[in-house]
Length: 265
Ligand SMILES: Cc1cc2nc3c(=O)[nH]c(=O)nc-3n(C[C@H](O)[C@H](O)[C@H](O)COP(=O)(O)OP(=O)(O)OC[C@H]3O[C@@H](n4cnc5c(N)ncnc54)[C@H](O)[C@@H]3O)c2cc1C
Image (tube, rainbow, N blue to C red; front, side, top):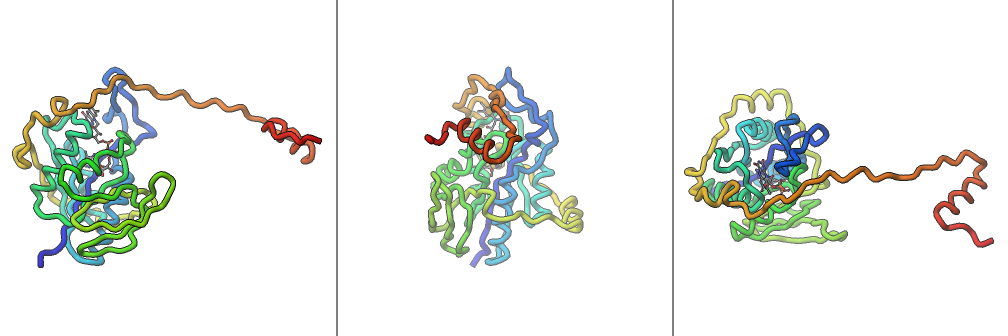
């Protein structure tokens, strides 16, 4: 029986504390800040590595992005992935979630059979949370989103807890399938110095449009139905503050009045 294969989708994102916005183009200026793996994707990777440790198999990390995204894939190898594939080329640039998901689905099909696909619940830059479920739809496999715990790792079935609409659902899914994970699912491991050294020497495979047999008309701006009409950063919410320094009894009464909860007598 072939060893199971786990695929992790990892996006390289800018440090959101430092990033600037291109208001004219309506997008994040990714060149304005240091780049790092999307934090939720490290949770996805950790879950794939746990699966591998329990049931054996291989973890393949896939990213679509610029050449610099190789460093994110090397980081994934340092944290337990066996291989990294970068989807790269000018045809991919300007893709919205629809085109991104299509490209990732083509890459997964090209990689061969896969038992579970792991993705983050969302990215910290695009923040749509669409790519994971869209990839599953393109591949015509089931998915569970917002997984906060994996309660059973099986070869043919996975059982998870999923946090949706303020409730926790216990779900089981036949494999192959896709899950998107939240930050609660695990604590991503830190790579050791030795792991980092090994990963630095690892070869990252680069695939272009011909490698994944995709029509370039379905990629980039041409293949993207989304149009960003406007982009605004909401002004910080202004809040009134009050420090009550009188004796506790008076302070409580003042506070209740302010909260409009004043006692009747
Ligand atoms: C009109 C338009 C033009 C755009 N042009 C560009 C552009 O030129 N350059 C650019 O960088 N972005 C561009 N974007 C943003 C780009 O579409 C999104 O960043 C991308 O589709 C992923 O969406 P998201 O960040 O919301 O991911 P989410 O749906 O929030 O991500 C969920 C999960 O999917 C996986 N995932 C998402 N994206 C990737 C990826 N690229 N590789 C591997 N896994 C992934 C990760 O596991 C992630 O945690 C554009 C968007 C629009 C609407």
